[in-house]
Length: 450
Image 1 (cartoon, rainbow, N blue to C red):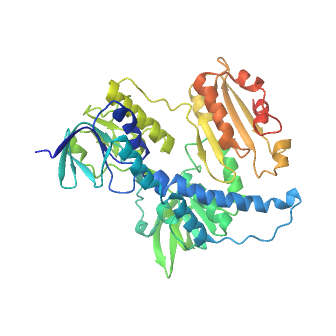
Image 2: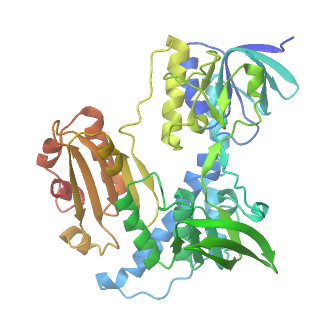
């Protein structure tokens, strides 16, 4: 017998799950969130928010390195890693409590235990059995497990953001966002960094030419980033770790103080007992329809990193949570559209992107115009002595619609939103080019990017 019944039970208290509560509570539904860890999930507690504190510090280091260009004499900076980690923890320490207060004010009950399915509309939360008309899977993600002998010796990004001692040498297994962002932090702080990626390209989902720019800058920073690598094993070597791998047809070894799993993240759904709910999944991917509902149990909705075919980004998690909330209240009316949602890789300089890569745009078969520009010689880039300034804007020739934009450096993490807004609202490339921008700014260069 059920202990309690809700209109909506959300499994997971991260951005996606909390996003569901907006529409459902506004409609007067009874809502509960089951979350055994900190409210907010990965992003504010173990991901993008604390990471950005470290990135901000390394931005300051990069500015100091370029001070001489601006005719400023400075001494060699001293990097206090333990103090930086302490500052990072201080910055985020009150987030779960603030979210708990927000849920209480919204009238959402928070259940501080792990939830698993017991039936199509039934969930066990700790010792309680709970029934709900709608159940939302918003469990987020976890580091991708790697089938490498000795993988248990690796640490994760969680550990990087918590270790008060900075390692002298670090190896990242995997060349995704985590490896590049944290690799840049480590390298600027003074650590020797190696990245070993199995595929032919770092950041394999992103535009190849843009990634090549970041790869080159990483090399200038001292990061040894290798692609086409097969890691064979990780083993203790005294107080350190030895990584054995195959590259360019040769078996090689490297030793480091830390080896970090930089192979990305996967949906955290394997402990949910999905079979009891009648929710079908294949290879860790829940089968969902266009409305983010399970195809086999329409009472079950999925949002956030548990969605297999959307980018694992916190704004997208919130966006999907709001879609699910609306569909619970109004019925299946809202569908997702990721075409104009921007993303950034916070290396220094950053890589910002929205829409299609050039390769994907060409696969559509439509005629496109590719505007690629090395902006390092432009006055704005020279003024700030940018390490890299590069952009590629992809335009559908027949419609004049922007279908992709990729920027390295040049305030791209801000400029990308102009291209995203144009894509979302159908503003043509000609109109974007002809707009008047404040000068001198990086935005003023948009007209020349097109």
